[in-house]
Image (cartoon, rainbow, N blue to C red; front, side, top):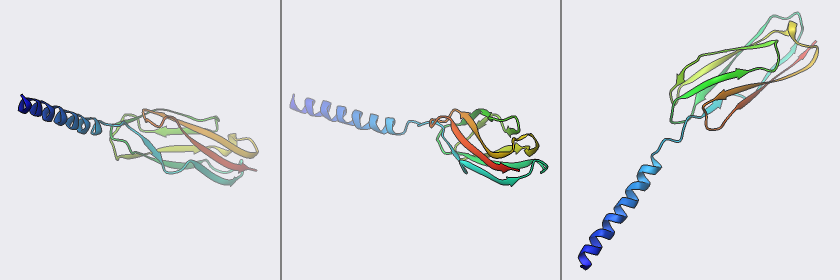
Length: 132
């Protein structure tokens, strides 16, 4: 009887240890890392050409990432980005175009929001400049 109980105890311990290994190896989800959180365009004139910046982002998670939407807070700023799933470790770019002719004079501070399936939630990027 004691031998039978030892065998049951050993099986139970192996099951618990085995389950911990399975739980530890479960995917944690997609995540996003941006190359910067602030884009400084410097001093611009309303007569200057459009300013084009490429913002690099990387899927640092272990599941595919999807950018669902990118919003800007000013009609003078537009964005383009590739749609679709992004594999872990892959990087892509958001192309940001700012038109100084449409921007108000003075201190220019706008926030761009990046919505995705990342576990860290919505990312924000500040775009700043001085418009003369």
